[in-house]
Image (tube, rainbow, N blue to C red; front, side, top):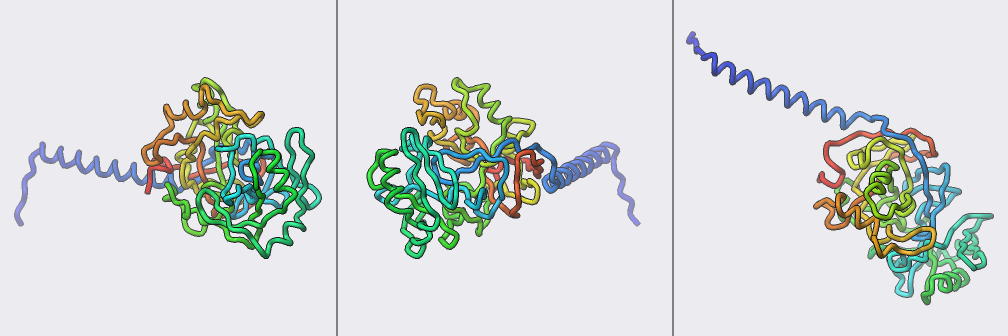
Length: 333
């Protein structure tokens, strides 16, 4: 048998290469294992419920994470919407005073309150009478349907907001819901079958107190968390660590982080008075300086959009667990 002699130099190089391969494989295995392991990342510090798209929200202590959004008192987040005379969704982007209208639920009816206005009450029984004849409408350019809630609330909204021919519609249980992929811009991690009524993108939106503190330390004009209209607020550890969370578990409920949340001028509106900050243009101006990513275009990011895998109850104080990834949710296809 022939014997091949290997010089000490060749042997050293070979061992270094082999060692490097083993080290790379080990690190890759550790990284992949970490992505599959749920780690405790924080606690739920607040919950917000926005039953009517673009109106004021309600701070709540508990709710149920349903397939199409946070459910409180039998009502689901962003399942009511105001439409204009063209049957297109109305938002604070064009009508910032909408934030001064506060919804609530009492005695089988939706109540709407606004400064210097008498409370308007929308009976669920009256709405259900119209459920057989839903109207065609659009939410962020996507065709949808909704049950018209009647002339009385329409006149009230027209008077408060100052636009003619406004209507309130409701996405009842039997009406078509939008698949998140129908507005598939930068939601490559989402799967078909994740449904919403009238949110912009996904049924859940999460943000952290730590990211808000970091932003406010840099901003000329600090803002409150409700400027961002997220549902689930988490006290974590590091600013923007939520970018790297992939699967999120809170109690029995599990979620998938499908994209970073892009922000628009709506976040510049003060929820207390409906006035936009047109001077400092914060928080957008500050976020633009360090929270833009080429995968998501020119809009800066704050918070994450979640779809839901498993439903379950949620309350303030719940521990939050997540798997981590080496890439941000916007940077993987």
